[in-house]
Length: 138
Image (tube, rainbow, N blue to C red; front, side):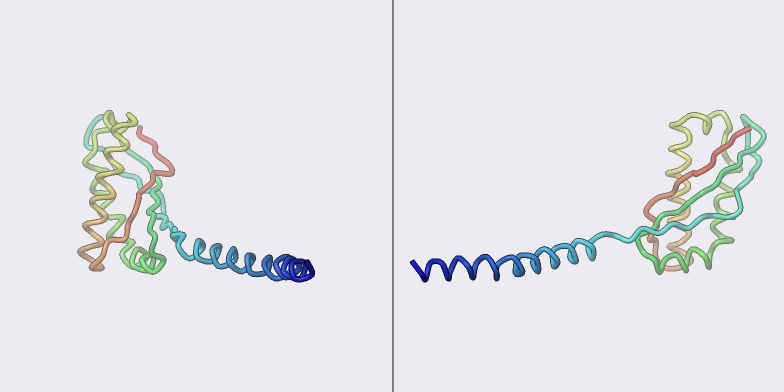
């Protein structure tokens, strides 16, 4: 009976610290596995004349990446990014991009265009998403 009490005492005092270490390791692994999300803001706002269906568009664009080092590439090629977006925007019909489906189609086209541009300029495309944070068509 005495050995059972000793065994029980050891389990109560030794096991909790061992379990805590396992939980700490799991938390560290989870933190390491979580992707790092970074955003690049195209500044200043983009303003372009529309091909038809309105006079102009004004929008703000944010680009998302999971590669922090890719932000340096986006900063370096900022003028080319703006140029590509302005050309794409100036081709748009104002009536079609006023609808939610038109905005989504433009967003996808812009992401694809910029992905190809970054592949050409930097040899890689780490863009994950493009977001319009302001969108005005008049």
